[in-house]
Image (cartoon, rainbow, N blue to C red):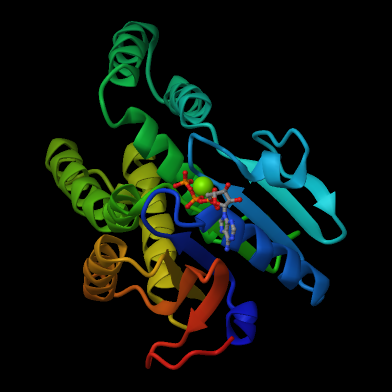
Length: 261
Ligand SMILES: Nc1ncnc2c1ncn2[C@@H]1O[C@H](COP(=O)(O)OP(=O)(O)OP(=O)(O)O)[C@@H](O)[C@H]1O
Ligand SMILES: [Mg+2]
């Protein structure tokens, strides 16, 4: 676990109820006591971090111990914030008539499946890129495995999507207009830059690690093996496995399978 302290981003993932929140919280507390400025982020709608630390944690970082802040991301709230942000950005770009139609389209998009996930991803992305420089280490207590794997693959998907948008915008602009003077091209290019930065940080074994929590039973072991393969395939470094509830205690195993504690 000590080697994980020097990362910038840690994810704690695993099947439901195996002890993700408990382990992420313990890690966050240990890291803060070791002198790191830590942000513990819960992305699980069930939000039990507040219960563990016995305080009401909300959408902005709250100091819950020396050098330790916590934050619970509420996907619905993020979706509203995200879309308000989009509206504010396009308000400066278009005239009244287009804006009215665009706003209607955005409000419609807000009700579509996936809107909350994109918004959650956007907020997580900002934290992963290290936007808040008050923290040395950001620890994510994630929702059960499948959801997180999708989130981690999002930069790749979104990059492809933004590239396609840029191509059609480029075709619309025609040869005489320079990309650098078109606000939409500029905004797309900025988004692409941020996604690349995010992906680089996610894929950097030095900066980011995924910790998989499991219990020593057949189904969680099999699910963990699958998650491990998927993460490594996506280029994400698995920093360790925590085998929880071994004789009701916690055991830590290295990548090579050697027990540590
Ligand atoms: N090693 C342990 N010994 C005893 N109790 C434990 C241990 N680890 C976790 N628990 C308890 O098990 C329950 C589930 O743990 P926790 O909430 O950390 O799991 P989780 O993976 O975050 O669950 P969820 O998928 O619902 O978010 C909690 O009540 C917690 O206190
Ligand atoms: Mg939990």
